[in-house]
Length: 114
Image 1: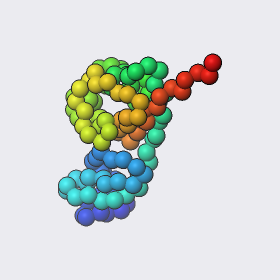
Image 2: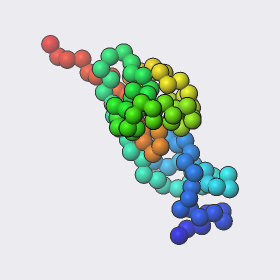
Image 3: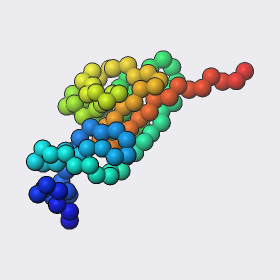
Image 4: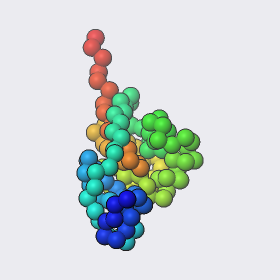
């Protein structure tokens, strides 16, 4: 068991983060840079946008719309690095959504060659 700033590193609080390394907020409120696993998902957008709550469901990060709404309303979801509280926020190609230890990169579906 590793001790960081006098607090067990087994119980860090989740903190918004991007990349493979980033700050992790510990119980005493201090930041410690540690490596943590990050699941990166790529979502091919078929259309102009997808609603945030729907995106969380389509990527299987939540099991229901109610769970998605709760996570969003509690400020646990970031869009492009900022907390997003709108459940029906329109997510477009090029945007990035973070939830728990997952990052969703929203990509435009390539046009079909004709």
